[in-house]
Length: 100
Image 1 (cartoon, rainbow, N blue to C red):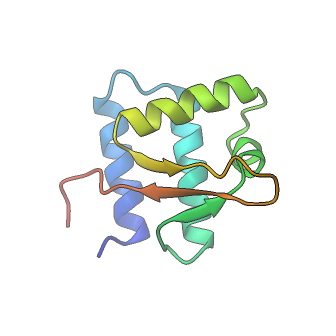
Image 2: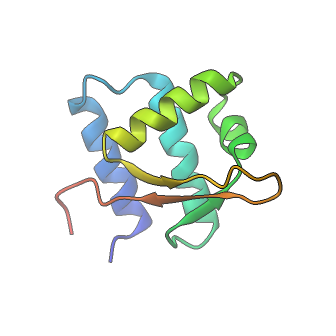
Image 3: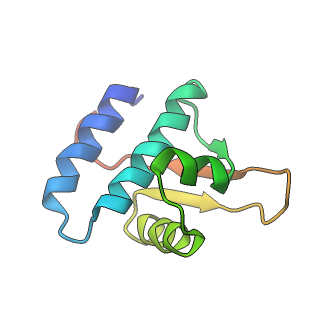
């Protein structure tokens, strides 16, 4: 079972090696990891986009969705959006590193 520290360490190891990863992607992923931690390190994380944008300091919805799409396509997360007001989306953090 991955610990929170493993997720953070593995993600930060990969950030330096992934030329596609920009500061907004890093900020958004760290916000996802923050809510993962606050919810007891249980997948999936249940969170609203407004909460993630606030935590990641991403003001633009367009930039938020662009970065979220990238994180999903690059294999960092699995996203199950709710598309319904009052119901949070499910975000599963994938095992992204080689450590146990």
